[in-house]
Length: 226
Image 1 (cartoon, helix red, strand yellow):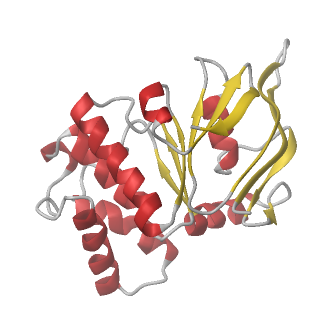
Image 2 (cartoon, helix red, strand yellow):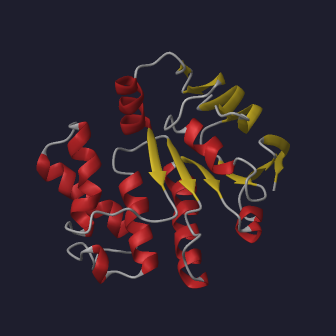
């Protein structure tokens, strides 16, 4: 199984502790397109951060490709994120001083698997696949919101991860750009057999995905096909 949440719980310590995620259990296999939905404050983003090893659970654990992660060091977790997981957030977080092509190359440079010329070829191919072949040398401020977010999608694919985690990837976009980004994520699942798990408040988009995990107060209310 590609991704497993086992009795996953996250509690923020305070005078009155705050439970963000409580006793969450599910599995996600290869080539799945999964929506995580729920009302504001239901724990959607908190769950995604736990799944992406960006936060540690208070109890329970996350398994990535069968690997138990609860006892890993921060450096080991960072390596898994770099090798196995791509991230897309609500805001693109592109580095403004670099071009679209250079932004996509950065994760490959960090991983260090490919020589420089292959990094450029791979990055250009990813951007072209997302309809951005004419914008390789543009900096983020020269791109539209939808184009910037598609560059962020290309960057998430740079190291050929098995899993993409997206946190409200269309939340800051208009309807046309939302459709472009959603279409890009859908093609990733269909053509590259990459699993995408996306937090979204857009129920119309969620209904077009294959599976929906709905949270209420940090717990799974239901988990079913769309």
